[in-house]
Image 1 (cartoon, rainbow, N blue to C red):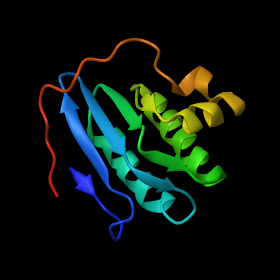
Image 2 (tube, helix red, strand yellow):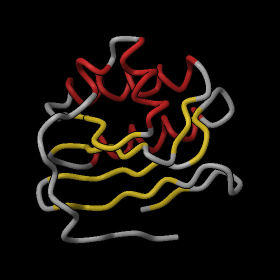
Image 3 (cartoon, rainbow, N blue to C red):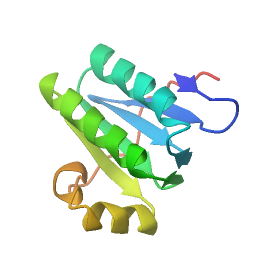
Length: 121
């Protein structure tokens, strides 16, 4: 599954054994959050296992970008799933630490590479 908002925010989802990997690239801000939110809700509501987010090529542009991550984390918990950031840029890491979100959002254990890839353009 892949979603793009007018070529600005590509989101790629890969299935990994018992988890789903979500790779977000581009800027997450007030303009792109609605599309990211819808996709994350769909992934959380219809999938199973952990949701692992890769944000190495993403830029959190404002508070709404952080808010959508927290909202997705809480939604996943209510669904009995775990959502965690497994890869991020240095800037995103500093932002998560400054807001103390790294305590709940960042996965500290090793993650296997994807074994099955399902991507549609």
